[in-house]
Image 1 (cartoon, helix red, strand yellow):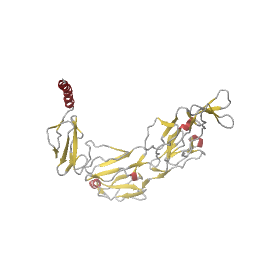
Image 2: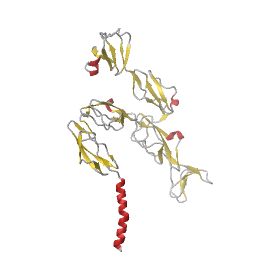
Image 3: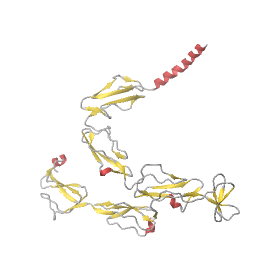
Image 4: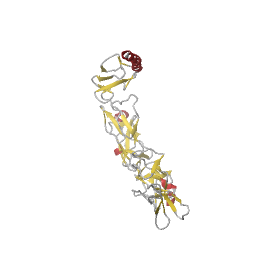
Length: 382
């Protein structure tokens, strides 16, 4: 009887196992040009992992001189591919974005340009790298900006609302605190807001217990712990109802600089060759005009003593090419030309298809001789 029952259970259970296995689709053998598969089959069961290598002069499109790929329900974890050994794989650059290659790798001599995320800046101002013989010419890094802020201050009995936690907060970030039930913020509601300024958070609020009048007494009461409360009438506080007394007050914590609304500081600061591009209740943001670069913090705030925070300066960063003062030999220049810092510009020479390449560096002009267009493209004129 027991054997019959066991056989019935197996008949019911075993088809279910077969169905579960058949539901997972096998994978066809991948087409690998310039390489070989181990083991080499026409099809592979779900969950099978194969290895592959590449012929001389080629390498896998992933790290290493060999690679593995796993069949998962009809698809490979990555499609095996052999590429030129001089090609480069996508670099891993935290807190940065760049244009991804459509085929997943970059040819030799290809250049890559990154943009750092908000709150980060390129280390040593380096934003480009070049694929040279299978290796990137430089390791690009996006580091925390000097004017960004780290974690906002922790305030007892309060949380930050409408904002997820992150490691770095860009300058001008505003955060709002909310006190827990039974607590209220001291002072005006505007003290619930803090913002990131010059790498520091402005001072945050203090959450204190709410108070309410006690019937028959002239004073007020604070909600206490252990079921009781204390009165604050008279010279001291007395426990009521057997509870413990609780006194409110500011919580000891580190505080940043204190600020006032910018309108409290009077007329906005005048910074030559700049414009106010953003106005907030608590700060102003400046931007330099063309051919100028900003030195200092772009954000300006009003301190609690009604003085302005340190002002930036818009420094001239351009070169002047004046044919009357400094003519370029064999170049017909009819007017004064202005070049921005780092800008390169071609000026045609008197001969066809020849030109001078002029560059502005540290407010000084550097130039090539008159070179043919082909030589400029090859970069052999400097």
